[in-house]
Structures are given as structure tokens and as C-alpha cells.
Image 1: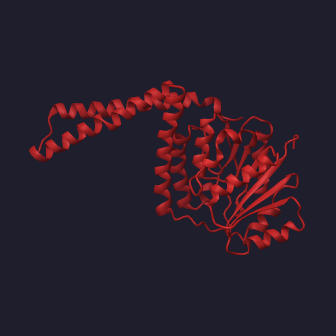
Image 2: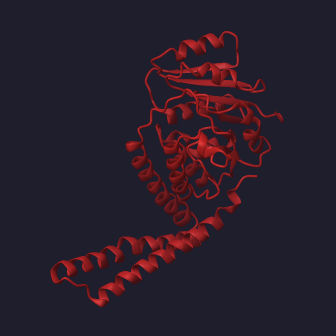
Image 3: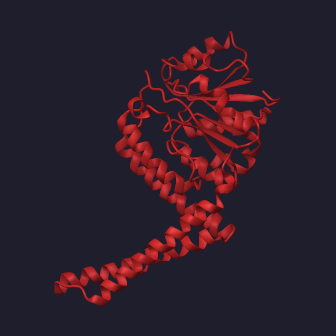
Length: 316
């Protein structure tokens, strides 16, 4: 398409029910289909090998030990890049990525209007009735946190695994450092921002059928929230302070100073005074209030500057 060689990367772990449906849904103009069998214990490998007999585009990367979907993407991207493909499209092996959205997803990257395009299910008019309620609520929360962590304030539905990447920027990403298991979508967006890649959301239809998620939300959500907070601080210090010393970086930096020093000090003094004397002095209340006001002011201006500084990274 437009003289671009397209490789589809399909991470697959125990996908015997849906892997055939996934591979058969891939458009015929795709040049290569890279299936990463992540040490599946079911018939996933057998099914793909049978399909490979009639489809020479299929290449199997078979892993002896389960390494996680993040590592599967690393292997798929690196293979596609080394083999000279221009665009790496990720379609999970659970058939959630619908083929009718394929061309619309990849066109911003094909036309070089974006370096990375990702599906967005949250704009679909009936999404609340299609997407399971717990996923919709969790995805909405993670969307907000991922905006801060990545710097891409225009993106939504960060957990959507249907994506297209311009493989030319792969060396800049240091893709080998991508988180190996759950949490990789936010981490990849963070890495893209550090190298000033243009990212675009493409509306796609949400689809849930036979697939069953192996994610345990009770443990997954807290771990992911911690990761995204850590990525936010890392992005601020690496890009907005160390690299550019931008207005956003300075505003965030002063807000962090207030958050980690005056606020804990004045709060602990207020609590200690109240416990010992059953009251809090006016001076202590004023100091605590001023600290909170300063934090919110600095952080608010940090966000405003951050959004402004990242506006050029919105794909078209």
C-alpha cells in the first residue's frame, strides 16, 4: 500500500479458539504475518502451522518459555524491522481487532501523518453497552492516568492493542526496554513521547465475543496505576527538565518540591499539635493551606504548559 511493506504482528498465548479467525481476517494486501507463539500450552501452534501450509505469508516465532505480551511485541517489531518492513501492525490473537477497521487504522502511518496509530473504542456511540462495565470504568481511569504518564493528552483507550507503528523510529525507541507483561501500552506511549513521535487515535468498533481475559483486576489495576505514576515522574525529569528545562518542567518541579517537603511537614505539625493539644494553631493552618494552594497552582500551570508543548505530537 503506497509502496509501504506492511507486517502484521500477532501475539498469541493459548488462543486455539480464536487464532484461526484472527489470521483469516487479515487483509490480503498485508505482506507478512508474524505470529509470536508465546509458549502456548494448547493447540495454538498446531493451528498456526496448519494455516501456514496454505499461507506463505505466515512466519512463526515460537518461544519455548512464556515471556509476556510485551516481549512478544519486542520480538515481532524487531523481526519486522530487520526484514525491511515499513509498518508493524499489532492484531492480538483474540480476534478483538476487527478487519473493517484495519485500513483506517494504518492510513495515518502509511501517509506519514503519524508515527503511531492506535485504536480507540471509547468514542463508539454504543460502547457502554458493548464493553463490559468493569472494563469501561477501568479503561476510563487508565485513560486519564496515561495522558499524564505519556504526555499525549489527546489519546483515549490506552489499553487497546490494535496499533500501527512506523518501524523507521524503532531504533529511537530502545524497544528492548519495553515492559514485558501487562502495562506495555502505556510504557510504549511514554517511550514514543521521549523521542517526539506523532501519535493519533483512530476510532474503532469495540468487539467482545468468545475471548476470556486472564487479567485479575484486583492486582492489575493497582500495579498499572503505580507504573503510570512512575512513568509520569520519569517523563517530567527526563524530557521536561533534563532535556529541555521547559516551562512545564519548571512548574512541575516546583509542585513536586511543595508536595514532598512543605505539605508533609506542615501536615504532620498540624496532626501532632491536634493530638497533643486538641487544637491546631492559626499559623499552622495558614502554612498548610498555602502549601496546598502553591502545589495546585504549580501543578495546574505544569499541565497547561505540558499540553501546549505536546500539541505538535498529535498525528493527523
